[in-house]
Length: 225
Image 1 (cartoon, rainbow, N blue to C red):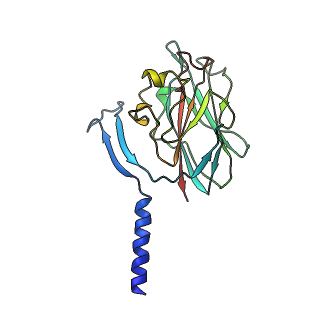
Image 2 (tube, rainbow, N blue to C red):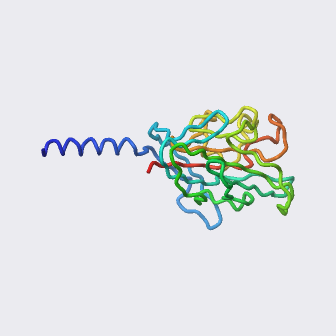
Image 3 (tube, rainbow, N blue to C red):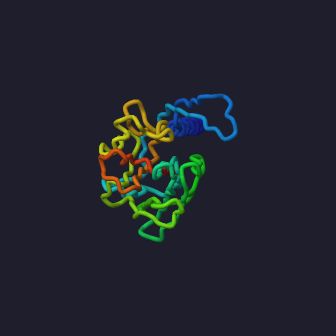
C-alpha cells in the first residue's frame, strides 16, 4: 500500500509539472520611473493543451468549463493627431453584449483584467469592437466581430501569423505594444491557452497602408477549472 501511494504521488507530481509553463522572462531595466513603461520579453514554453476550439470564422467554443479573462493590450486609433476611442464588448451564446473597454491608447493598462468569468463546455463566445468617428465619441463606425467572415477582425492562436492583408506586420511597422507578442519570424507568441484578437476599426480597405489591424488588440486567456 505504501509503495502504491508513493507511485501515485510520483505520477501526480509529474502531471502537475507537465502543466506548468517553463522558460524565462526579461525586463529591460531594474528601475522604472513613475509614468514610464518598461519593455518585457519572454521565452516561455506552454503545454500543448488547447482548451477551446476556434472556427475559421473566429467562433470560440470552450471544450470544458473554463475561467476566462480578458485584457486589452493596446489601442492605436486616431485621425491625424487626434486620438479616437475604441470600444470592445463580448457576449455568450448570442446573449446581451457587455462592454469591457471604452477608451483611447493612453487609457490602456495591459495588466488589468477587464472580464473575469466562467464559460462552460459548448458555449459560443463572441467579441466585437468598433471605433469612434469623432473626438468626442458621439459618433461611431460599425461593429466588427468574431464568428463571422470579416477581414476587419481576426482571432489568432499561438504560432499563427497576422493576416497578409495587414501590411504593418510585413513592413515592420507594428506598434510597441505588439512587439512582445511576435517572435523573430513575425508569428504570434502567446500561451497555448490564450487567444489574441486584432481589429481594424477604420474604413480603410484591406491591403492599404492604414489597414494595420492594430486599432484594438485584445488578449483572451483561458484556465481549466
